[in-house]
Every structure is written in structure tokens, then in C-alpha cells.
Length: 200
Image (cartoon, rainbow, N blue to C red; front, side, top):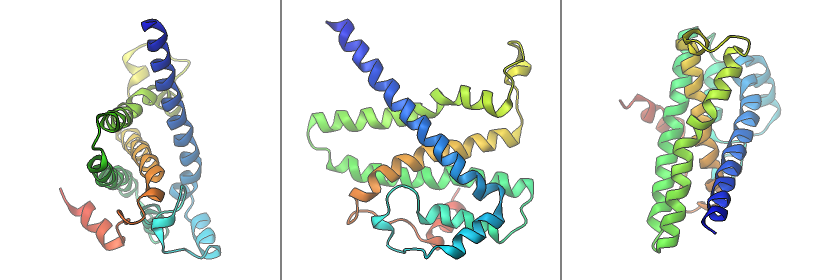
């Protein structure tokens, strides 16, 4: 009986990790144009009237992604600036995630709700480390290299891209809850985003 329970637990973990990986891939393809082709962003933003009621936003649109898109549109970015934005992407989404998850934790009075909270936050905390090896292998395209230190070596640029992808994990977790926190949480505006990013 315990074996069956363990199998069910493992299946649940696999489902969560796979769903997060799928979300990560979807967001990567959506955001890659934002980070690589500022002309596309400008054209798309000109066509779309931006709804400012972010509390009702669901999965794709939010002021944080808009903030980073606009920064990229208005600058010819150097490699250092791109890496800075990738680091900041993780920083801002981790901050938002911590705030949202704190609101949710305060609502968990009963043991079963606390257990659900702990399970969710634990899965989010380990999910990026679980998907990172395959993601990194694809980024480095090192499948034909034999196992060696060189196979797993990479530079600062790749490390900062990984930070942005980790930020996407926190982003996706936040966007799951935002629609249900209409009266409890509001996205930071651009000035608040700047203030958060300026903090050490």
C-alpha cells in the first residue's frame, strides 16, 4: 500500500514539473521576441490597447513584462545591459512571488491548507533545479560532447539567461494566483518596480 502511495506522490511531482516546464517553454517563445527583436515589440504594442486593470489579468499580460519590453524598445542594448535586465527579471518576479505567497500563507489556518501551501512552495523552490540540466543542455547544444568538465562549462551570458528563466518560474507561479487576489494584491507600477530593483 505504501508503494502505491509513493508512486502516486512521484506521479504528482512529475506532473507538476512537466507542467512548469511546458509553461517555461511557452513563455520562452513568447518572450524571446521581446528580448531579441525590439521592432516586433514596438509594432505589437502599437496595435494593442493596454488595459491598466492588472488585477483582472490572467496569464500573459502584466506590467512587469511591459516594463522590460519598454526598456528594450527604448535602448540599443549592450550585452552587459541585456544581462542586467535578465538578472533584474528574476529579482522582480521573486519579490512579487514572495509578496503573493505571503498573502496566501496568512489565509492558511488549518493543517491541510498549510500542508498544501508547503507542498506548492517546495515544488516551486526545486522546480528550476529539476528542469535546469535539460534546459542547459539545449542552450549549450552539447549533446555530442562526452561527459567531461567542458560539457558542463558555460559563461556569464548563459548564467544570466538561466536567471531570467528562473524568473519565469516565479512569474508563472504568480500569474496562477493573481486572478484570485483581486482585492488583496496589485502589481507594482513602473516607479515601484524601479524602487524594488534599486534595493540591494
